[in-house]
Length: 295
Ligand code: GLN
Image (cartoon, rainbow, N blue to C red; front, side, top):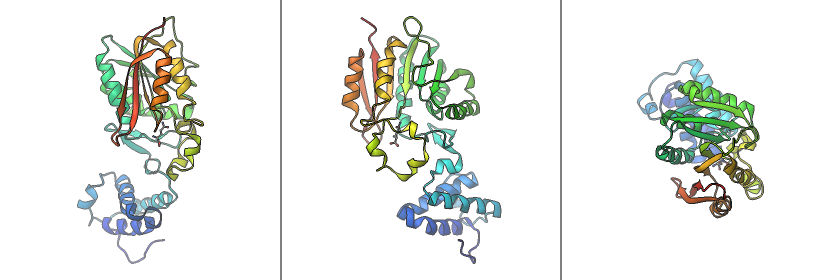
C-alpha cells in the first residue's frame, strides 16, 4: 500500500515505511525501516542520512517494501537480510539457526582469553550447539592456534555454519559434526579437549510465550530447555569431564537467575576456579570453570 505521489528518494521511502511499521513498532518504526533499507542498499544505517536525497531504483524499492511487509509480521531483520554482524564479522543467518546475539560476544571474548592462557598448540576446542557457527568461526579467526570441533544436533544448521566458516576463510580450522550433545564425540582415554564452549538453549518453557514475537521465527530447539531452562545445560555440564583434559575449561552462556544452579552443577562435576561474567546489560551471562580431573 504505497502513497502514489511520493518520489522514490531514500528519505521518502523511509518516511513511507516508518508510517507503515508504526502500528507495530511505535517510536522504533524508523529504526526498523532504516535497518531494512540499509541492508537492501548494502550500506550502513548512518550512510542513509548522507544518501537521503538519492533516488532509489525500482528493483531496490520493491524489494524494500516487500521486506517491510514481512517485518510487519515480526520476521527478524537478520532473516530478511540473510545476515547478521557478530564480533565484527558478517554471518549468514537463516531460520535454521539462532540469530547471533550481541551478548554472545561476551562468551567469545571469555573463550579467547582462556585460549590465550593455554600453553599447548594446537588448542583443542569442542563447541556444543554451534548453530550459525558464529562462536567457532570467531574463535578460529581470532585465535591462530585453535583447532575446533563444532557440533550441532541440526544438520541444516551445520550447513549454515559450514558456509560461514568457508566465507570467513577458516574452514580448515573447524571440523563440523552432527551430534546430540556428546553422542558422536569420541572421548579417548582421558578426554582430549582443552576447552568446551557452548551457547546452549536455556530459556524456560513458561518464558517462551512472554518473549519477543520475533523469537517465534527462530528454531525452538536452539532456545527452549524445559521447566528450569536447564534440560540441555545439565547433561552438557555432567558430560563435560569425559571430554576435557584435567585443567581444561568449560565456558557456557546461560540465562537469567540460573547462575547459582549452574555453579552448583559445575562444582558437583569437579569444576573449580569458577568465574561468572556479566553482559553489557549487567546480567550474569557466562560461566567458566576448570576441570580438576578425576579422583
Ligand atoms: N539470549 C537468548 C534470548 O533470550 C537465548 C539464547 C539461548 O537460549 N541460547 O533470546
